[in-house]
Amino acid sequence: MTQKVKVELGPTQTTLLIPLLGRAEETKKPRGLLRDPKAVEIVDALDYDFSKWQGIRSLAGACVRARLFDEEVKTFPSSGGRF
Image (cartoon, rainbow, N blue to C red):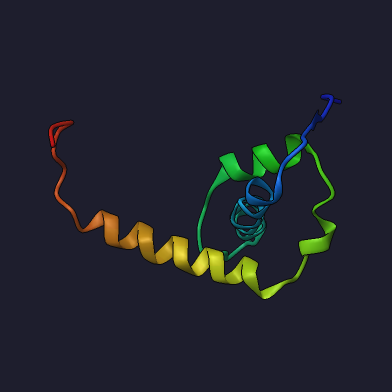
């Protein structure tokens, strides 16, 4: 078993874990809103008590927002690395 990474975060950094957890949880669902295996990898690697956020509506909201953003970004033509 891989040793988990202990994190010490301030309030702002802690709130950024909410969308990360939401992405990980949706990825684990058979028909989740999005697929983000890296989010699952990161959440699984952290020594952090995510239980306080399990089931809160903010998780779903973060995923819906991310999915909408991802879909919008797909409509932009590729710049081939140029801006």
